[in-house]
Each structure stands twice: as structure tokens, then as C-alpha cells.
Image (cartoon, rainbow, N blue to C red; front, side):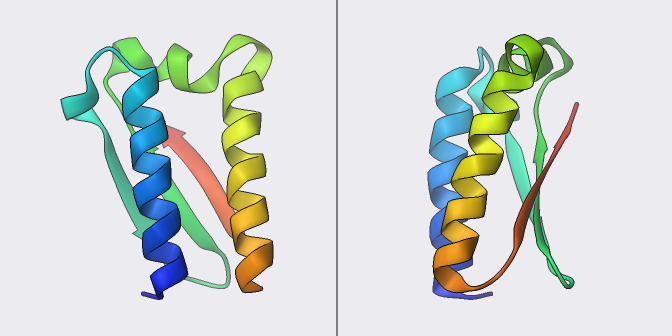
Length: 82
């Protein structure tokens, strides 16, 4: 894993933990393939907080990852699970 991927993981972890009621249940896994996918797992009661109204929060998180990935010339993606 590159330093950029680890940095994006650390920032994403801090953001998601700040959004949810149960931060200890947050787990972010990195799957490496053609695209680096960050798989965010949260408690079932917190999924709505991570997705946001009409997906606004998830879209913002994806925009953040897109910008980080563009900076490193590596495509980043986001997947949210409960």
C-alpha cells in the first residue's frame, strides 16, 4: 500500500468516525485492484448518517476520495456496508 492510500484511509476514518454515533464499530478496509476501493463498514443504525440525505454525505466522501486519487493518479472508490 502506498503512503497516499494510507493517508486517505486515515483521513476517511476520522471523518466517518465523527459522523456516526458508534465510532468503535467503524471499519474501513482497502481493496486493491485496478481501482483502490475503500469499503466502509458501520453499525446498521449509522448507515443513514454516512449516506446522508439523498446521498449527499456519501457523495461528498466520494468527491474527497476522487480528489485524493487524482492527486496520486490512482482511481479511488467508496463502498458503504452495514
